[in-house]
Image (cartoon, rainbow, N blue to C red; front, side, top):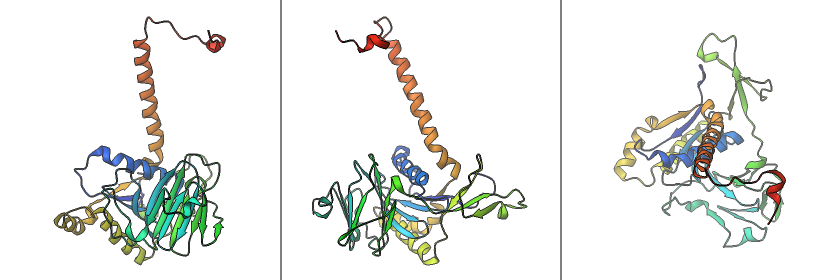
Length: 293
């Protein structure tokens, strides 16, 4: 993390003895959300440790909110009700009881299918990531389909984010070349820096004190929902020691590093294949490769 950085994303983790591989889906999800601008450098995140697909978090951005991440094969349609959200591939399907995604916000459930008792009815965000993003996600509330441009905020306290079209609104911090201490190492500005190579951080607006308090209560509740009473009390008593920092450099470069890992894997497997095929006839290249005998 750059010298002088005071704020960075904070992630609350329950158990240092967790299997490392179990955290990989969560970090992949956070990298996606950071890259899209849903989460900024001053976001705070409480994951559900029993959720192996990393679909449910409690988050603090400029507000406290449960956040559910859904990967859809097509944009489809979301229908918003009081305390309920449904998604389906068609307009009519989103209004039916057998919709592929049907979330009752008073009864959000974790990976072991148990109630979480979260205050999510009016503090909920659904993030939809689509494989085919040629069309926007349709959002229906009441009797009308809503226009949204990537994000729709319902008066019911429910937010829907179409990840492919989401345009974040941040305050940006750039290094202050005249800084005399860490306290003034960064300067806030309203617009994203456009100069090549300029380092910057992206901040949500500071949430009100109530939202901060609400998030830590709800987030800790989600994180400890499946713990014994004894362990839950231990985590609550030392919650400030269960937080780790994710710096902007780690979040920004994770995609690039992942691509490097996959490229290395591809290279190794192709080398192995070449060795295994040594002495066999090579495949034709060029025009001959299109000939069918």
